[in-house]
Image: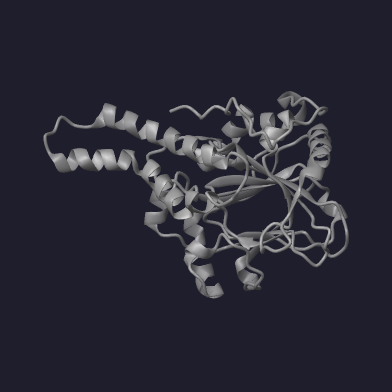
Length: 330
């Protein structure tokens, strides 16, 4: 199975930056191993969850991604894109962000599609990862809100499997704006918040027990934390005084499509981002093609209709799931 290529057509709502640096991995990357690793088992997840996941790792970091030149170049791009940011004043999630940056910036797209970064993250995960098959999920750029009392991003879980949170601003200049995650399972934090694990993708403002919260200390701009965001409850706290706080969050997906898909298509059909329904269709078709290849290659020579029916149903599960989500959205 190969990574899904970037689509040849860009939604009309997205315009490319006219002037920006050109990504050069030899100059802009400075990859270094993570300082610490947390496993799903250490978070309290049981054997079934660990076995169903493409990686036993919950989170890892901080680790260096960008050189000083890389920080400066990506910051230039993010400031140029800031005029495209979306405000989320009525929601409980990210207050100020840019979506679709992989469509808008060649530099950002090349960073997200860097084979060096994908190989590095795959080494941490212990399984092959590639840029997310949906371009809108390949990267988000988050900015500190203009309204100081608002959190940069409230407690939540992600709608995709893997990402890394790259601090692009100098942490030493910031008061507040800390990245934190909950050291426990989805079921445990859901019980603390009086909700269900399925409801954790929306934002939460409640305080959590200090002994269960890890605050990530980024040594400098250009450092990141890797996580299985759909299994790690996390947030970015509010700033205590005005400051420039920019994080870039590239998303990834496991290359092996044999396991369950953590991409929350049921939620994404309502995102409203340009072209996202076509992205979802390509994503489901990409996974289904890999599963059909498995049927062609591995189905035993059998006349048992139950075996054949089960193989075909499993191969078509992602398409069926998306079509059901689209029906409900209608």
